[in-house]
Length: 333
Image (cartoon, rainbow, N blue to C red; front, side):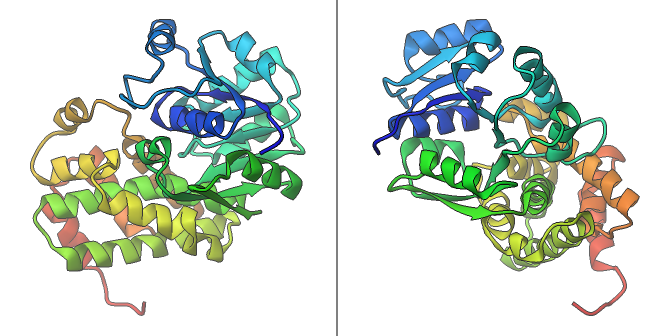
């Protein structure tokens, strides 16, 4: 690589930190922002994110800060990786410092909490029609990316030159980006898979086998595809990394916080007990309600999402939820 870029990542959780490490290893000057001053100082002192990625050292070109003004002014390449519930707030802070950023990308997955909107809609509401915007999504566990294990993602953008720029920033011998123009498809896949992972975890926690898990994942992909299509996404996107790939990863590996939440619920634990054990944000808990509401508003049938919602928010016993799915009227696949 011959060109070094100044890059700011907003969000110092496990995924934001992993991307910061990746970009710094690629030779770029990276500034990682987090809102908790005490934690950012501890990271700076330790030279690692001991909270989420202990033992993985920061490259020399990676710095950290809790100063938002410094972070925004560091570069024109802004990558937002905060949780979805903090997405709009973060964009508004960016706007207060830099009213019209040249470009914006995000690797946040989920929907906006109060509106059930896809995140690109929030971007448009805050900034208007940015000429260069992109979302990064795919089957990624942060620890594996930070360790340099082989990984592939999709970058969907409204400007293919910008998508190629981001791909060049991220690409190395172990990290491969693919390009797309389907922002909607990427966002729907990245959000809905968390709900399906809770469902898969519940099924496994109840002691059901591989047949159940396979059927659930297959039907889950079908549900996600229906919602994506209704919102304007492309079916082929859901057969790629940000659809099937991310769904398989999140539903089948216990690194997934959403799957672990489902496992705990299936084993008879309360949501509160599971959250205490996991000690990190479980995006699927909130997303289940948001997608349930969105599917209802769009008149899209999503029976798995419906049953997960009822387990989480209406105290439906997990075994009853499975019975409800299996007793549905016969239909063509």
